[in-house]
Amino acid sequence: MIQVVISGYGRMGHMIEQTLLRQGIPCVGCSEDIASFDPAIARESVCIDFTVPDAFRANYPVLAARFKAVVVGTTGWDDIRDEVFACFEKAGTPLIWASNFSVGVNVFTAAVSLVAKYLAKSGGYAPYVTEKHHCHKLDAPSGTAKTLAAAIRQAMPGPVDIGSVRVGELAGTHTVGFEGAFDRITLEHEAFTRQGFAEGAVLAARMTEGLTGVHEFRELFFAE
Image 1 (cartoon, rainbow, N blue to C red):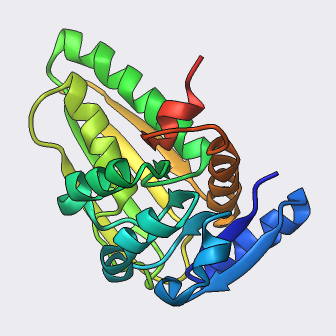
Image 2 (cartoon, rainbow, N blue to C red; image 1 turned 180 degrees about the vertical axis):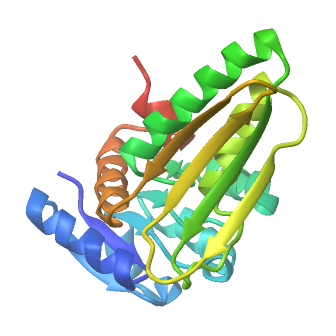
């Protein structure tokens, strides 16, 4: 049985705590300052990190050095991804990361990849991504929008326009369009609440048992 420490005790942190409780997984700590967390408990725990970009940038060496395994749902650190991965690899600490831990979003991304693959065969379609989130979200475009754009570019090399909206308390809506001369294909995922992110993050924490290395969540989720 794993035990979990939550780094970042905002709305997502509270939601993850409740998800752990429902699933009978011990939550042995919640911290806004993970660098000061008890190292002895950390060594036996999986850390789920949902903080903000600046906090994760400061804390990732501590996470890699002290915890048994780490799940990162914080976004906004793409520019230091190689440094982060190298740090975890050197420490021998398993890491599962995702721009979005929602199972629905990961299936949505797979569907977008498939559509882009087939449209690339014919040509003549221009892709775009729009994303709408709550006004408290600090990074724009969202990590999920960037992941969707990257999935499209794998099949359809070239620019992918991304539009971002920050308003109200939206949980998150991502729309992908493929604009052709004679028609348009639109795919959309809408999160009703952030609960899906919490469920996926806890699933990822359970996946760390016996795991080694650095992995994107969807890589493990779709593994045969």
